[in-house]
Amino acid sequence: MKKVVYGSGCLIALACVGILGAFKKHNTLTPPKTKKPNIVVILADDMGFSDIGCYGSEIHTPNIDYLAKNGIRYTQFYNTSRCCPTRASLLTGLYNHQAGIGKMTDAEDEPGYRGYLTDNAVTLAEVLKSAGYHTAMSGKWHVSNTNGRPTPQEQMDWLNHHKEFCEFSPISQYPTSRGFEKFFGTIWGVVDFYDPFSLVSGTKPITKVPKNYYHTDAINDTAVSYIKEYAKSDKPFFLYVAENAPHWPLMAKPQDIAKYKDTYKAGWDAIRKARYNRMVQMGLINPATTKLSDRWNSDLSWANNPDKDWDALAMAVHAAMIDCMDQGIGRIINALKQTGQLDNTLIVFLTDNGASAENCAAYGPGFDRPNETRDGRAIVYATKKQALPGPETTYSSIGARWANVANTPYEYWKAESYEGGIHTPMVAFWPKGISVKRGGYSNHVGHVMDFMSTFVQMAGAQYPSKYKGHQITPTTGTSLMPSFKGVNSKGHEDLFNEHFGARYARQGNWKLVSLSNDTTWHLYNLTQDKTETMDLAQQNPQKVKELKLLWRQWADTHRVFPKPGRNKSE
Image 1 (tube, rainbow, N blue to C red):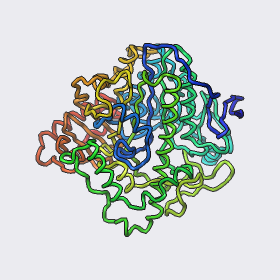
Image 2: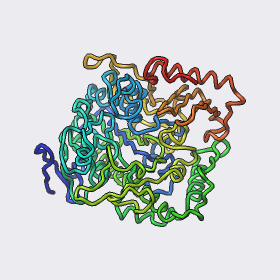
Image 3: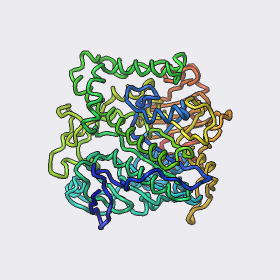
Image 4: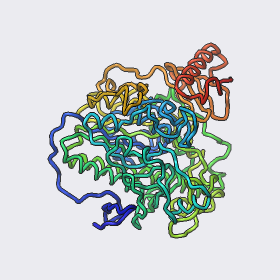
């Protein structure tokens, strides 16, 4: 082991392979008996619905698959379509606008758009800590205001690790100010996986990382260190593992990329159809009600794609990032086994939104994207696919066609309210607490805001009406515990969303939805058409009217409209 000094003289142990937060190896512990279960939430970032093996993927994810084989896979679980809004909803048990993050983390002078978790909300960590839990987080925070620099040059110097400036957001908004005893990770959203910006331990900036640093490994190995420490305590623990993978930029270790170097040379259609067929074979979807939607922009065939070599490598890097994340999840599972904690630990795995169709290269450097590495190498934003994805010196993303594949069998992607944007794979594993048949499916309609009610019930905690002198908004989530026990539970009858104009209202199996760049409402019956291929709006004008009114009532009462009456014209 070696030690490296980080910001403010903070000493953090580093493993010889360059991973932060590792503790000295020790033999299997005999943990003290605890009545309350431990809770581990693992949240992937920009991962598609079919990007893991237990949901139909060719990507090697044996550890997530193990959780699914010995737990429950949910077939109707939902997020809020983008990174920070989903994190806000998951952490608080509220719709994201209620918690202050209606858009992103920019500070706006509107209740639903503060850009940070507001005082009317409590976090999972705050509630569970009050119930006697240890609380820790490793990974991506992204629910606080981002403190930028006053000039573009200062901002770029900061992003490039050439100068140190102020805190990355107000300290009062850091995880350790919102109930987490320990935190290692990034305050901002986008990261260079080899040398991430806004990396902190607690509140102290980490100003230098080891040569062989890779952020996904650091997140997961820090989570392992927390487990080993907390296993010595007589208190249960809550651990939030917020992965950055596989969010762009496409950066992965060469040995992981090599596993997939030939996999995606088959092209978009072949991979998408193979995933769909596996999903049917494993009983995850019913082809009678879930047809494979048309491939997005299918006018370009793979055979005629002039960039097929670059595109195949891009998806290989995406797969490698997920593979590496799964390896780390395996180390988390192993730590729980070694310390005798696994049987009485609830582990949930899900993603914050569908795979991203964004072309991150088109954004160019600025805000949270550097233009060179710490050691002065130029970063290429591969707008013309002129630089191969994978290394630290290239910013690129998989693009819309591969995102459409990643979200098989659904249409669209991150930021939209169609199923491809909001429908998340969700696995729940808890040997002592889940009594339904292992490896089965649940059609319970769930949402990320449900974790609050679930964990409160599990922990015997109290969701407060007041916290630190502030009135707390009642949670809008419902407990998942009935679905763990096999009790007949349908989950949410009504669900809603809004993000940059993309929106939906779901009541029962009817869903009214519109795209972010289109004010036209479209109507689907999810009983018959789960992939939203048959618009029934013209045939059912009364149902459109009912659901439109329902959505407007929800928007009026959940801080969606910045001001009363604004943005309400149809």
